[in-house]
Image: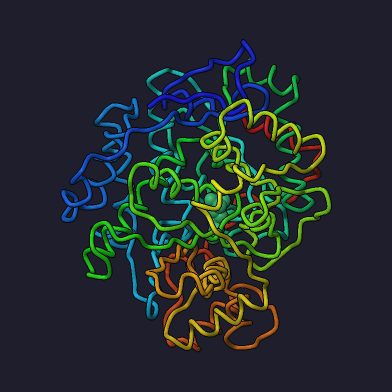
Length: 491
Ligand SMILES: *Cc1c(COP(=O)(O)O)cnc(C)c1O
């Protein structure tokens, strides 16, 4: 598996690299990212031969097939992380929702969001590579709530890697915050920022481009990597459960091999959907990949009109904050894959300079062949949460956006597969409001109210968070972040 740069080469970065390098140094020339060169399709009979495979066996076979340059023993050890999921024999359950709609539950890992699907094995691989190379890495991450906990969890006590995680104070749910601020491993630093997610992210960008910061890191012998979904080390693991979900539909007798379901994916940075796109490219039968957005519907507009337009938009805070994104980083990899580096560089330059680009008619047509999209407002989402509850399911507000896309007439006769990206427990106040009509409360009160109404216990993995001592308290100003991180690294 080889990678090249989405915006062409500047003579300083390497123009063509392998997987391990893409994972350690994800940033490419001209502000681009590394993206895979065409991957060979899976051989005939591949799906059939894996009908009885475990998730780990299937994942291993796919990673071998695409040719990641990671030692066998390391890959196997990374995949053992799926043993930490609720049911190691079935880490990615698929359940029936109603006629024509099935749900793939991607949230059974330790932090209860789909980020664990990729970050769990990713953490093992990055730390092992760092040890082999005898290098020290710093992972800097800004989170709106799900990436941070998952990144901290995977790197806890992992040698040769430290993590500094910035989160917007007051901008996450209590559960998400507690998942971060109760981490006590010495290689993890959690920093609350006085501001919103955009502030946290722009503080991170400023830091990443600061020459002084880079010089300080170099003096300490520390290299920077990233754990967000521009890192292909995450995307590769997001290609795998697409196959598992498909095979699970076959095993359950819902479809036959070769049938093409419609996938509905709650999307922000387009990492989950990108995994589905590559899976389709590898030969997984998929009718269409449907992008579900919230009121920040820039992706819906892009897919439906070919226009990616930030010029008149402001970020809207919604009840599905992991999708409150305007600059969706992985769209660039779709552009590169469909239209090549020269055109991608041109379009991304237009976006950077004018806040907008427009695909031509032919290009737009190619996007439409693969993707469809719609968006779901918060009140519509709550109605879907209520409806799901009436049918016996608790769903989170991100997953809820997919029921809007499933309602499109063109998919009525199809098998629709909804990607459930978080457990309801991470967003209990929204769920409580939807099903009980309670006004927004703190998470613990909402967890209790929902659990009582549904006649279940609060899952212990979540309930325990409220008992754990807080190890990272305090909130700092953006201007103090650099000093805080350097003090952590020098300690
Ligand atoms: C991260 C996340 C998303 C968005 O996924 P992308 O890969 O960024 O498109 C959706 N829902 C939840 C709950 C998430 O944590």
